[in-house]
Length: 479
Image 1 (spheres, rainbow, N blue to C red):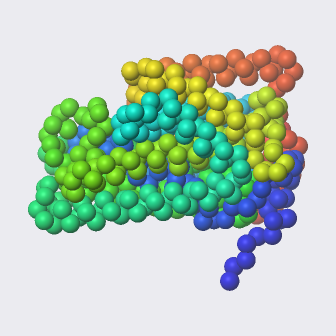
Image 2: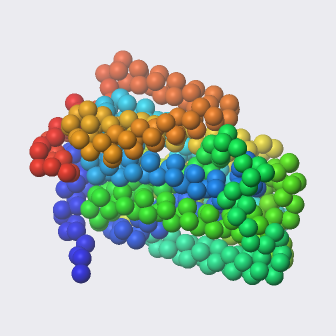
Image 3: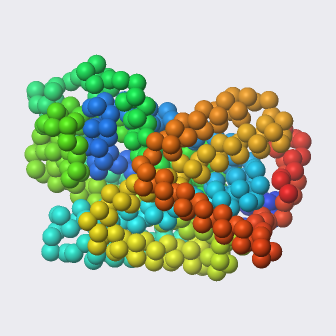
């Protein structure tokens, strides 16, 4: 029987890079896997099914398969960098140590755009959904309640977050199973189109531009698996297990996405209308559920979407964002107070509270706009895609250029393919997202110049000789 690594051994993973082990190392491989699944939301297609269906010409299952394959290259690059640098901070740490500290700062800065906006978007979507179910309670009150609840859970420690994640994952999977069973039975009874491969391939709508365009739609549903890397300093497993958890979470989520969207696509009551007009109200999946089982199933899936986005997903998003702020603050690249760790609960307390405050303010502001949800939706992913580009570059520079690796597949081919796929997504992103993304990057460059001008150039904690994960040769980190 395999024994978990000695906590004293895993603690040295951080200390050898010049940091103190402050966070609680209590998460198992299963906890990491559940965290990743919750972050991606196993029932995520419930809320965005219609737009993916319309954008893929009805081949929604194919869109999710393409998205999963596309993001797998990024997950494999993450797995390599987390082995080299097993610490909180994700792309910020990997680019900073794999390439250079200023690049790490910029990578952390651009992914902050995604991480800071995501909780606000999740809270807003869930609050609007709950308001539609319970009109007597205003959107702002639902939003405040979600923020307060998640902040308390995150503040009480990562173990509390992990326990809640387990409960929420089981609940989501039960509801998904109910939909799949009812949906399959309905198809067997002749409802909808009956069993067909058209959600995977439809000769009437298929074209290569459409297939590649599906990547930019479906790939967004998989964002969140990378959040596992933020918990590197709270995992009691060896570093390579973190990478394996990311890959496993991506594969499991992809399989769930394909199954539920395949069934839903066969039950869509007005397929031609959905293709022609899209899904502006975001109700296409619930319409399919109603066609399969009636109003009770439509209501159940709508309620599940609200709770999954507003509680489960935003809970882990808030946790991940606070860890990124913590990692940057302890390197003096964010205000130092954000690096404070609560001595009792072993969580970055101030960072957690700041994320809650920003999410509340952003959510309330966007709730006052008619285009709040659509505007946020176009903005949240640009930062992550751009930061992932830096991740792939860091793999090549750290392993091939600096350390002379001859593992061409993992350290050159995979990151280059991943880079090209993401570059395509960034280039084809909506104009609003591109404008905000580049403005945010420009602000980051100004902040970086101010650091240099004031003698506070980005520096990481004591850069020491570390052993390469695959050899016994010492490898110096970049100075």
